[in-house]
Length: 170
Image 1 (tube, rainbow, N blue to C red):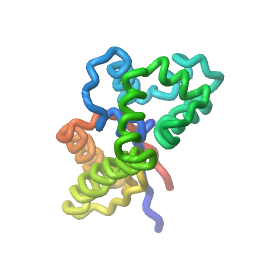
Image 2 (image 1 turned 135 degrees about the vertical axis):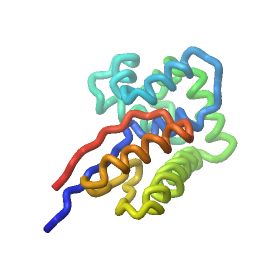
Image 3 (image 1 turned 120 degrees about the vertical axis):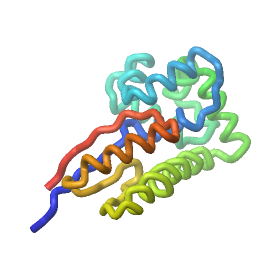
Image 4 (image 1 turned 180 degrees about the vertical axis):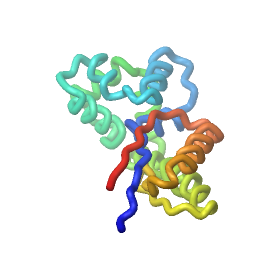
């Protein structure tokens, strides 16, 4: 008999991870960026702030910000630089200092530290069956209460503010 599974999935995870590693820039735009990054409304907020047609378009802008070369002068990124000048200056500076592709690598390493080295290890030590899939964990529905408490406690302990959703599967 197949066991039912659940997933705990972080909303706009790459952006939430970016907000986590971003230094305190002490600017209004960086505070806004962090706020909409951790409350799970980043794409909808960017859609509104940039006057874009859809959430999908906002997601494209966001992925350009994260994964394109700092020399990318697309109209999307021009608008991001206008709305989030200090944030984009930090992103561009990081890419200049470490290499364009290293920004994404840095975010992937942070994701791995949180989900594999931290959360997964804690869950497995307690004997639960659990797997990671990038920014989410998959576990048996029968263990949901315990695992979700572990995740919530771990995120609080490391100061990782994020919005997540839990879904069930057969």
